[in-house]
Amino acid sequence: MSNSDVVQPVMDALKAGYRLIDTAQVYENEKGVGEALRRSGVARGDVFLETKVWRSSHGYDRTIKACNQSLRKLGVDYIDLYVIHWPGPKTGWPLPRGKVCPPDWTPKLRDTGTWKAMEDLYEQGKVKAIGVTNYSLRHLKQLMKTCKIKPMINQVEFHPRLVQKELLEFCQKHGIVLQAYASLGSGDASQAESFFAFPPVKAAAKAHGKTGAQVLLRWAMQKGCHVVPKSVRPERMKENAGVFNFKLSSSEMKAIDALHTGTRYAWKGLDPDTIE
Image (cartoon, rainbow, N blue to C red; front, side, top):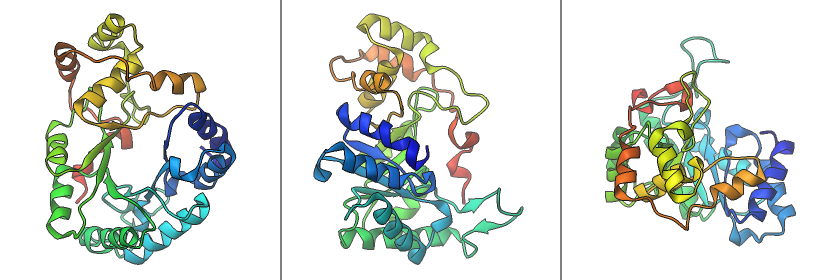
C-alpha cells in the first residue's frame, strides 16, 4: 500500500484497538504510517511500531542508514521493533542475472555487519527490540554463535499448511518470540488456497460460533505464536480481534495441525533455508 493508501486503514486499526503496526523499508509506506499515528490521536507510547531493514541494505553502515531513514519517515524518535527482512541479499529483477545487492554481499556480512548494526541501534535506544524475519533454524543457530544480543523475534510464515514445529520449539526454548504472518493465507504463490475451506477449520468455526479467520488466528495463538493479521477493511479488523473469548480443544488443535504439508505460499514459495 502506498503512503496515501495506508493512512486510513492504519487509523481504522488504531480506532479498533490494534496497537501493533507492522511496516517495512521496502513497503515504502512508513511516512503514511507515521502520519496515521499522528492523526489518530493515540499516544506514541501506546503504539508498538515494527519495521524492517530490506535485503539490499545488508551491512553495518547501510543498516544504520536505513534505520535513520525509517525513523525520519515514521516521524518518531524510536522504533519499538526493528527486524532484518530477509536472510539474503536482493537478487533478481531489476538486477541483471547473477548480480546481487549489496554488491559486497557474503553470508558472513549478515551476522558481522547487519546484526552488529542492529545491536548498536538497540544499545543506543533508537530501537527498543531487535529481531529477524524469515530466518530458518539454521540461520538462527548460526547467528546465535556470534551475536552479543540474541534476536527477540523471528517473524515467519506460519499456518496450517506450514506448521513449523521444530522452529517454534527452538524459539520457545531460547526465549525468541515466533511472530506469524500469512496466518489466513497468502496470494503470493499460484498454489494459494482457501484456509477457511479446510474441514477442521470449518468444524471448529461452527462449534464455537466463530469465523474461519478467527479459528485460524486462535489456533496460531494457542500454538504459542504472536500473530500479525492483515486487513484494510474495518469489519475484518474487528472480526480478526475477536479471538480472546474462546479456546480450541486439543482435538481441534490436532485436527488443524494435521493439515500440515510443508507448503509455502509467501515469497513465491521460496524456502528461506535455501539462502546460504
